[in-house]
Image 1 (cartoon, one colour):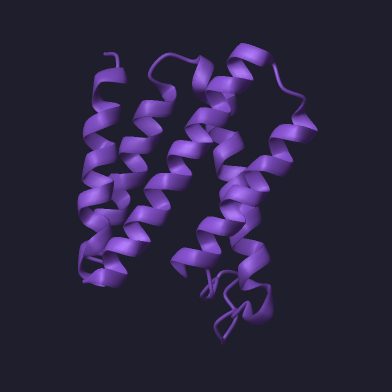
Image 2 (cartoon, rainbow, N blue to C red):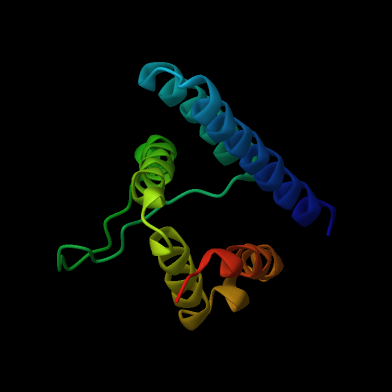
Length: 138
C-alpha cells in the first residue's frame, strides 16, 4: 500500500507542477523551447519514480509477435506523454473539446478493465473525471 501511495503522490505532484507550468505560460508567455524542456524533465521524473511506462505496443501493425519496446520504453513513454500534454494544450481553446476528450479517454480506460489491472489508478482517474465535468458544456 505504501508503494501505491508513493506512485499516486508522484503523479499528483508532477501533475500539479505541469499545471503551474501551464499557468506560468499563460501569464508570462514562455518560449516553446523552455516549456518543452521543463515538460520533458517533469514527465521523465514522473515516469522514473512511478515506474509506469509503455513497454509494448502489442500487435499494432498486425505482426505475428508483440512489438516490445525494451530499452526504448522509457524514452517512448516520455515522448508520448509530452506529446499528449501538448495535444491537449492545443485543443484547450475550443470550449468543452478537451473536457469531452478526457472523459472519453477515461471511460475507455474503464471499459478496457483498467480498474482490474491497476486498481490504485481508479480513484485518481475518477477524481480527474469529476474535476473535468464542470468544464463540459452542452
